[in-house]
Length: 122
Image (tube, rainbow, N blue to C red; front, side, top):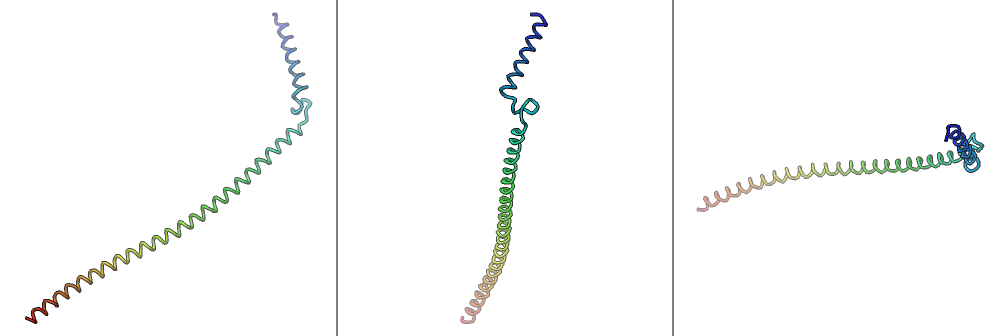
């Protein structure tokens, strides 16, 4: 085939494709005989759906933040209570040590008094 035949054949093929595209599928393409309103309408619909999804996600994020804040408050209160209990335990431990020391001293004094009483009674 020669170049002019190839060009004619290519031109015919392109012409056929343009004709078929116009007849069967280009009614949605603006500038090719189609109306741009369905395309714009679909874009607006998708934009509204995305906006709705974003608003829902924002609401969920807000709820999650409130729950996280509530958990933080509970954690802080529990930590405060645990710290208070720790201080009370340490105080009671120190007091118990002191009472044991006093009891040991009293036992020593009682033993001394008993020995003195035994000496006196002999």
